[in-house]
Image (cartoon, rainbow, N blue to C red; front, side):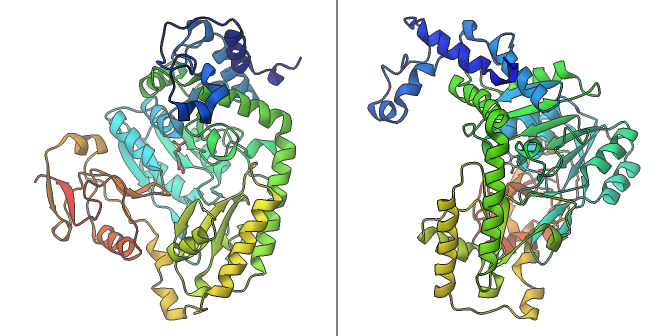
Amino acid sequence: MNKQKKMPFVEALVEYKKDSFIPFHTPGHKIGQGAPHLLQQWMGPALPYDLGVMYALDDLHEPEGALQEAQDLTAKLYGADHCWFSINGTTALIEAMIMGTVGPGDSIIIPREAHRSVASGLVLSGATPIYMECEFHRRWGVPLGVTTEQAIATMEAHPEAKAIVLVYPNYYGIGVDIEGIVKAAHERDMIVLVDEAHGPHLPFHEDFPIEAIAAGADLVAQSTHKSLGSLTQTSWLLGKGDRINARRITQMHQMLQSTSPNYIFLASLDMARHQVLTEGKELLERTLRLSRQLREQLQTIKGVAIMDQESVGAMHYDITKVLIDVRDWGISGVEFEKLLRAQHIEVELVQAHHVLVLITIGDTEESIRQLVDSVRHIEKMVNRNPLNDNIYEASSDDSSRLPTPVVRLTPREAMYKKRERIELCYALHRISGETISYYPPGIPFLVGGEEITESVLQYIENRKALGYVPNGADDRDLHTIWVIEE
Ligand SMILES: Cc1ncc(COP(=O)(O)O)c(C=O)c1O
C-alpha cells in the first residue's frame, strides 16, 4: 500500500486502545470515566484517545515511532525534508523557527505586517529586527506585503542579516513574489522563514498560488487548522535543505510545546494529511467553485464590491479569501459585521469598510446561499449613503495602514528594562514597553522597543474611533501605556 495512504499515528492510537490497558497514569479522567458529564456528552467516544504521554505511542518531544512516521509522511507530501507537528499552533512554530535560526546579536529582516508571534519570537531569540515597509492598497484598505525591490533593497542595506521572514499569502490571500525574494535572499546567504499560516492547502490544486516550500523557502509554518481539517491549535512546520539546523529547530520546538500534548490533536494532523492526500483535489475543487460562485453572486448586489487579484494587482492570490466591501452603503466594516451577526453569519475579520470571509473544504452550497441571502437582505435594510470622494480621501481604509516602526531597542531588551506607565497623550517619542495589536489580524502596530511616533498615536486614535479594542496592552482603553524609563 502507498505509505501516504496510512495514518501511522492514528493507527497506533487505535491499536493501543484495543489492548484495553487499565490506566494508572494521567490524564485524571482516565479514558473518560472521571470526566465531567457534560464533557462525556460532548466528547464521548473520543475521550479514551485522550491519553498522557505513552512511550508505547511515541513522544512529540523525541519522536521515533508512529508520530515520527506521520511527520515524515507529511514532510514528503509537501516536498520537504523535515516536519514538526505542533499542538500550540503556528504561533509556537514561528517562535521556534526564529529561535532556531537567530540569537542575540543577530539581525533578522521582518515585514511590517508580521503576525504578533514574530514579535514574540524576537523577544525569545533576542535578535534585532530590521523592518521592511509593506505596500498598502488604499482603495481596499489592505496590506499587500513587500515588493521584491523593497526586499532586495533591505537585504542590500543589511548584508549582516542572517534571515528574512515573509508572510505568504497574507490574511487576505495576497501573495508576494515569493520565488524572486527567496532567490535574492539565498544569493545573499540569508535563510528564508515563511509564515504560511493561511496556505496549507496550496499544493493540492493547480489554481492556487505556488506554495513556499516549492518556491525554495527553508522553513515554512502552516496552520493546518485554518484551511484544512485538523483541530484548532494544530499546525505543522516544514523544513527543507541544508541552510537550516534541524536539530536546533527541534530543541526550540521542544521548549515551546506542552510536555503533555493532546494525542487527539496530534491524530487530527495525521488525519488531515491523509484527507488532503486522498480527497484534497476534489474537496478543493469544490472550495474553489464555491468561492467563485460566492464572488459572482455578491457582485450582483448593489453597493457591494469584491476584491480580486486584478483590482489589487497581486502577483499571487488565493480566491478562497473573499473580501466584501460595502463602502458604497456608507457603513463601516464594524457596522456591517453587526448586521451580519444579526443574520447569524460570523466572519473572520473586520476592517475599514469590509469584512473578510474564508471559504474552505468545510463549506457547502447551503452556507454560500445563506451568506448571499444575508447580504441581499442587509442591502435592502441599509440606507445607502455612498461616501463622496472627500470622505474617501480621509476614509478609514487608509487608517488600517500600519505605522512605520522606529526600532530603538530590541524587543527582548525592552521586555526586561525598567518601565513606567504614563498617559498616552504624554507618550510621543517615548519607547514602548508593550507590544500591542488589534485581533484579527493580530499584526502589532507597536512592538516593545519601538518609538511611539505621531503615526502610532494617530493609528490608535483611528482604531479607537472605530471601536476596536487592543490586544496585549495592560490598559485596554489605551488611556495609559507602559514605556521604558528614561
Ligand atoms: C498570518 C498569521 N500568522 C500566524 C498566525 C498564528 O497561527 P495560529 O493561530 O495557528 O497559532 C496567524 C493567526 O491568525 C496568522 O494570521
